[in-house]
Structure formats: C-alpha cells, structure tokens
Length: 475
Image (cartoon, rainbow, N blue to C red; front, side):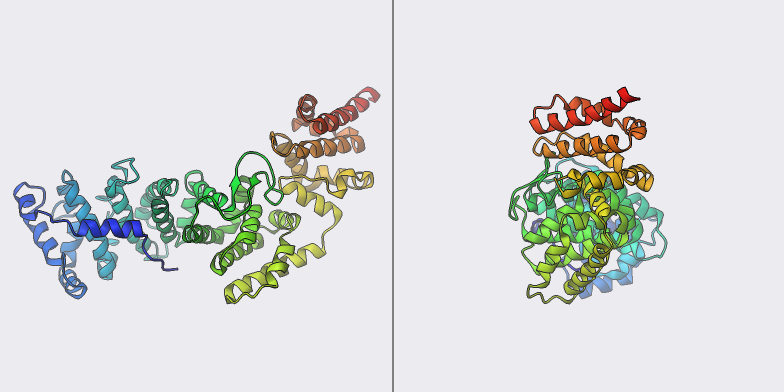
C-alpha cells in the first residue's frame, strides 16, 4: 500500500529545502537558541547515514529540538514569529523521522510529542498555506507510527486524529487535484487501526462525504434527488468523468476499502446516506483498470458479507450478480481480484436461490428506489403479503415506504406514483391497520400528492386516498 508522495507536496518541500536560512542571524535575534542551531546544522544537508549516526548519538537532544521538554522549548515554539524557519523545520522534521526510524519511535514515547505541531494545523484557513500543509505531512507520518506502536489506543492519538482528519478533509474538498491527493493519501496512512477508522467514521459528515463526492463525480453522478444510478436516487451521466484522474480515483477507493473493514459499523449508514452499493456497482461497470476493479470488488465483498440482511437484497435488486457474471467472462489476471469476485458471486448466488417474491419486493424497497416491477400490479401478491409487509422487522418496510414518499423525486416522478399504489393496496387488504400507516405520515403525504403536477402521481394518490375513504365510510 506504499504510495509515491504527491507531486504538489514534493515540489513544495524541494523549494523550501533549497531556501537559504540566515541561521546565525536568527540566533542573534533570539528566534532560535544556539543549541537549536548546532543540532540543525549537524543534520541539515548531509547524507542519510551521517544524519542517522548524529541523531542516534543524541536521541534525547533531537526529541527536545522537535517536541520540547525539560531542556527548553521546541525549535518551533522559539521560532514561531519566523514563518520561513517554521516551514524549513517542518520539512526537515519530516525528513528526519523518515530517515531515522529510531527518532520516530522515541518521539512517540515523549509525554506530548504533538503539542508544538497541532496548533499549526489551524494557523490558516487558506488550503495553499504551506505551514498547515507541511504540519499535516509531519503529523501524519508520526501519528501513523504511533498507531501501530501499541496494541491499545494512545490518548495522544485520540487527541490528534480528529484534528488531523478535519484538516486533511479540507484538502479533499478543494478543487485542486494536487491538494485532494495530499488529503486522501494522508487519510489512508492514518486508517491503520480499528480505532483510527472508528474516529474517522464518527466525523463522517466532514470526512467521508467529500470522498463519496469524488467517487460520484468520477461516475458522472449529480445529487439532484432523482434516480437513474442503477435504481438509485441520483441521476447519472455515462462515463468516468468529473475531472477525476485515475490515481485520485484509486486512492479514494483505497480509503473506502480500508474503512470497509469496519463493515458492521458503517455498512447500513453508507447505504442509507450514499447508496454505496448502487454507486460501486456503477463504478464497477466503468472501472478503467484492474487495480480499481480489485478495490471495488474487495469493498463490496466486505460490506455485503457483514451486512447480509440489509445489503444483499439491494445488490440483487440492482442486478449486481449479472454484472459479476459479465466480469467473470473477462480476461482478468489479478489473483486478489479473482478471489473477491468468486467470493462475492458465491455469496450472491447462495442468497438468490432462497429468494421469494416477497424478498424481491423487500429488496426493491430497501434499495430506496421503486420501478413498476411485477409485484406492484399483482392483486394476489398483496393479498398474500400485505400483513407480512406491515409486520416484517418491526415495521421497517412501511417506514422505508414513508421515507421514499417523503422525497420530491423531481426527476423520476414514477417512484411517487408506485409508492402511492403500494399504500393503496396495503389499505385495501388490511383496513384495520390504517392507523399504523397514518402514524408514519403516509395518509397526509398521499393527500398532498393529489395536487402534484405529474398526472400519474395525481392518479395513484387519488386511488390510494379512495381506499382510505371507502373504509372510513364503511367503518
């Protein structure tokens, strides 16, 4: 999972490394101490081996240089008024912990190693400001080391991760693909433990949502409350688009794959908030490379295997099994991809063998989108299944129907017409359960739709209200 550093970041770091810093003048002005100066000069612009020997010979001194301690302030605290020195030190610090692993290990044993760095993440709201950007690079490297240094979550990481995720997510929202790349790679480096993934998920509005937006842009999707994404609630334009490059797409898919190892925690919410199964199925059709196909399949495998009851019906309804059959016919060579493809196909095959017409209808409802499939118009289906629809899983299906009806569906009005049809059938078959439907707001919503501009919606809502009135008068 090792990735090349983003070009944008490498270029910035190289420019800063090449800048001359008047160190002696900084000492005279009191911006840094003489001890800081000596330690910096001993490791600056020297070969890696010499750098390693120098630091290993004075490990405690270099910890104090970067993190501060009993011997005095860190160099960042001392030089806080000199942006040129702060930038230089941030680049040098990142180089030092990369070149000298013993320094990383010793730093994470410091009582408060992130203290001089964390405030710098908030120094500016300008995404192109070098100081927060370079700070996030150093902290990402150090925190990722800390995360795997102990089997138990450390308080220092619990404090740093939310702040790092917040900053890196501002980069993923930026229109500059170079900054997006830095943000996504930084996040990927931090998702190394179950706890770090949980913290990331807890901030999902600011962390996960921008990543899904990138995936939707790559798929050609626009979130406008309609529905053509493999029976989803959002419109799709064909083709891999949205200005999303293949590398950025791969890195975002990598992050979601890492997150999917917490499938039990995230699966249902990802589906409810982003229709992730529909989106990934669509991306699978468009996937331009085996490496992106591999991540798409692996993520689907993780999510579906840990959320079988809720997500397998959606996958079947949007015809993922047929797509997997098509993929199996291609000349694919990646062994991990082929293993996930077989596992996913086997899981879906096993599920579809036990499906009934009721299961198909429930899957359609759970997908969040309706089409005129056979059960909707079949009186026998409603006679046999109306009670089960109202009772199954503590009434989750009529709640889903209410959720679907609550949306505007401006670009796919037939969904509202179908939902009205279904409610009418439920009232007709089980008039004594009208109160249950009314408590969900279904009667009020259907009466509102009698004034809808779409003729089919007006007609189906009128028929449903007619069933309600008929049993009201008969009662």
